[in-house]
Image (cartoon, rainbow, N blue to C red):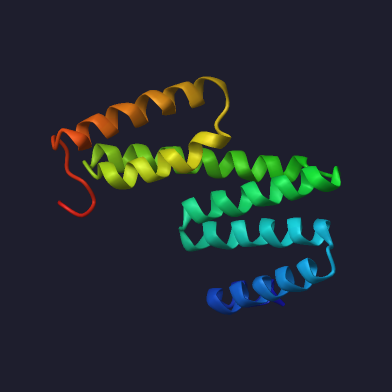
Length: 143
């Protein structure tokens, strides 16, 4: 039903369906169902353009799949795709001088980034925080 609502552009109604599904799965302690609900909610948030929220939901889905120890690959793949999207959006915002917003995208990505990406994010976050602290950059509330 939620997929039909998404196809019709009724994203808020689809969100309510996923929330109800999550509630039911939690009540019966069906962890695989909880993981699927988080996965679907991550995709929905990505469709809405809420990448940071999508990363949070995808991360929760991966944690749930780790708990049930089944079929983690699509969940990990989604999480990494969303992390890459968040990093790219952070870079775009940083170029525009919207450092506070860029920082939020980088921080959302950091726990899930791998290898060199994680090192680069640590470095970039530290630089942006110094610039903001010194009042040298625009932030999202001070264009």
